[in-house]
Length: 336
Ligand code: NCD
Image 1: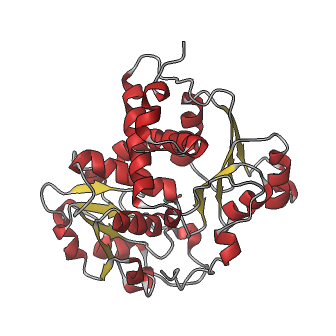
Image 2: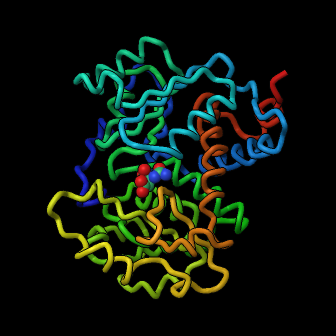
């Protein structure tokens, strides 16, 4: 399927990086087939059982090293990758670009080469540039997980959203999900459309024309510029207005106040029983009212909890690639 017209297209060698070994990476939802998604969700369900225990740490990745390299602000994603690795007993190094040698002008390639000298098993990277995870994969002999590259992809967010919906509805197949708001700047929207369509959901993107990329229907979704259509969905998935990714001077919406009036998700715009999701961070009173964000229909905190077990599953799956059934008993053994 064609990539977004608004994105610099990735070269084929970037999509399939010639890394130094045959290590598997998670860079895009497009890397995954349905059985891969089902395997990761199954693993996440297994790991979820460990959350109810007094001792939550598992020995599964003892002796492995995970590097978290974050070049963009993050609370949920960085915290959950760090906790996921710790819960699996891996050694974890978490590096934020601010305060690191990136501040002194070190390039991503040189940072990757430097961290590669410690022989990490997995590098998790978030970066403002599309294709940054591919750069790391090319220079470090480790599995690479994309924790968000520019407005391109955020595959673990899509997987944790699938997990949350699957837990709530019992299946993704046939669900109707309306994704509302700033789709243009959203790696979350792009990854979620691909993941939901892969798993048999029906997706409608809703928002003002300047915030919906032209041609996005090619991903297998519908587009509507009428906010009232969200009432027909099982899940209303709200996106943040990503002002930091909007080009200076570009006039995507005339004002935030007008955006809120026309496109904000309010209780009045929802039908009863609809579930509401948001990847966070939320801008209360901009794209979503506090009343909706804090309502019983909101699954926002459940998404955060899902993020932990899904990232445990992704780390585990990359390092083992084994079928869920074969790993489950040892994967959930507690640390002695
Ligand atoms: C998202 C991101 O960074 O892409 N947040 C997240 O990972 N939870 C969405 C956003 O920033 O709006």
